[in-house]
Image 1 (cartoon, rainbow, N blue to C red):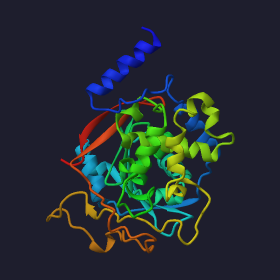
Image 2: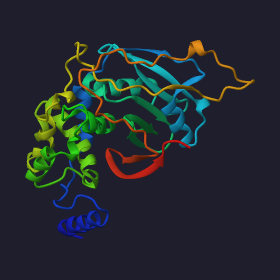
Image 3: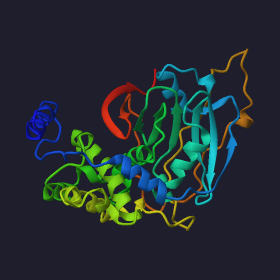
Image 4: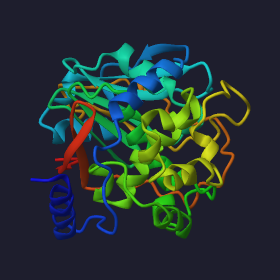
Length: 327
């Protein structure tokens, strides 16, 4: 089948599934493997220290999602990651057999700008096939989804909903007229998965926008002819009212992590009973001490009954599935 016939067939499939069909996907797709390597080479890790929760407790969201995925809460542990650029720790959760180890997860997340990290609540690392998803601003990583482009894509969903438009979450970038105008000004979409919805398009373009800013030579390294067809989209992210949220550099300024969302409440792994009694004094304090810079009252954080898991083959997102977030 010729390339043009393949493009037509792909567009027909997208039309049938309710996806973006008004313009073609770049062929070949933008190389997210090159983006991943460029980001790794040019984003530096953030210094951090770790301390561990009492073994009886987990954040509610970690317990719920682990059990929904078929794992025992007893095989999950929680730990506070204190990055040097923020006064409030991030609480991460990990299954004992998760392929992504503590060091890797802390390193990759810490390479993202602290302002961007601020809109992510918890990270959960589980065994399973390579996939990742975000709901309620907490990200779940399954299997060896240990690529910085995956971390940025999932963080990008929170930035879309809460941060880019600079209005405390009243307007999502992907649903704004500002984004629609930028999208309409381009002639193509970056890759097949970006064409599944404007939300996924923004998340994919976020990686390109970040690459363009931090890698010498910018996005044109990925192919100037291709980049010219999608440049209004990633430029719209960079030039959004709070597009600077993407950019590293402020490693601990007064407002660097001033928009932290509330943590999930700590719960015991098993219910209290005559057999299992818990020391309430060991319940972790998860209150956020940093005063928000923006009014986040419009920033809705909803842990829905279902979450979209995005599945990866190498650096390509091949498809998505819906999974339960609690039993």
